[in-house]
Length: 323
Image (cartoon, rainbow, N blue to C red):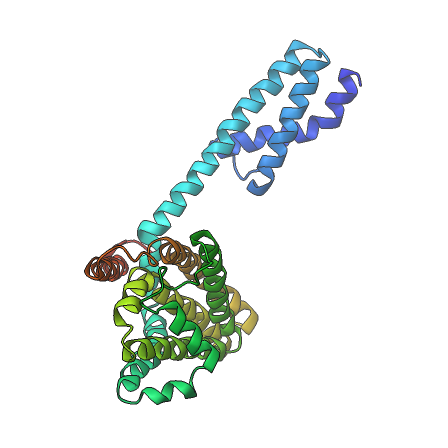
């Protein structure tokens, strides 16, 4: 292809690319295309530059495309840098500020989740047979085998690896979080159900293992990741209840509009909960099964985790708006 038709075929896209780089630097108004298109457009510009150089088009054209490619590189990575700063700002301030702003829903979720959990733990110490109303015989046999003090790897079967368990824990946490969050679309009832049912199952497991004398193995296993995982479940429920409240009491908005507005903070809550679930899965797979560390060390690490996480949600990002 000769230079003239080549320039004519790409002129519009080059002009738009140039306008984008100028708008990203604050020289002009709104960019001519969405930021999500930038990587693909940048690749096409680099291809045009390579073709122009290979076909020995005029030095002016090659210089223009090379200049555009350099500006595009700076614009692209400047945007990525801003995205990284936004993520860091969210984690250091925006997320805990949002949790505090939604404290009423967080409190409701915590009561629905931790109420059955703690209540059943206490109940099973005086009435251990009640566990059979809550768990199937094969479930009881499974948790008994995983937390038996004779097991070399806590919380996992003999043939399982840490990496395999990490993948399993990620999948399991994502499943629980998504169910609890999406259940809010049933006018909040689904979120309450999954919060309560998970609290019941966890309370039954913890109460049963404590009552039969597996306290050291069970609590040393769950201590490290419990703060991340349990609070992530509560926050998933809070996000679901935010959706449910929009459907129950939309105010002057239509239910659809209210749901769209409620989804903004709800999804941000889920972003944070998802990161907590991922961190919990990592700790659960690579730290929790260790049996060589003293019981006191693992319990101390768990207490430190709870203290730091609660302090983070109470104090981090004070004075910032939870967008």
